[in-house]
Length: 105
Image 1 (cartoon, helix red, strand yellow):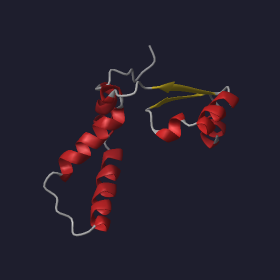
Image 2 (spheres, one colour):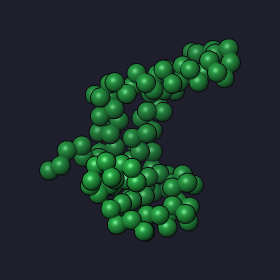
Image 3 (tube, helix red, strand yellow):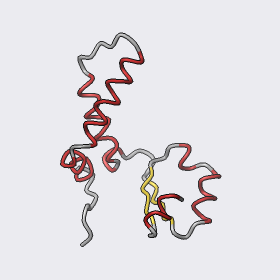
Image 4 (cartoon, helix red, strand yellow):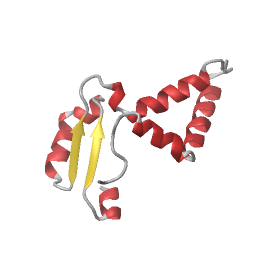
């Protein structure tokens, strides 16, 4: 709700089928807020989910990594995700790969 108040505009969310996204409590929340529109992705549609591009990119970077501990692995993953955040063309590529429209017509 903080984003809605900050933006003072309706919010549209596209969700995968993660249990938290489809649980009764979340459905009730969405139904009670007319400013929130949720579009659910099909059960298995990685080609429609931009997050899949993020994970594929991350997995490619981890291919030859041999971390000493889970903490080391977490540090490397956080660092790589943080670097992605500052590469808008890469992130836009993940969205474009889904066929979703980035700009309003």
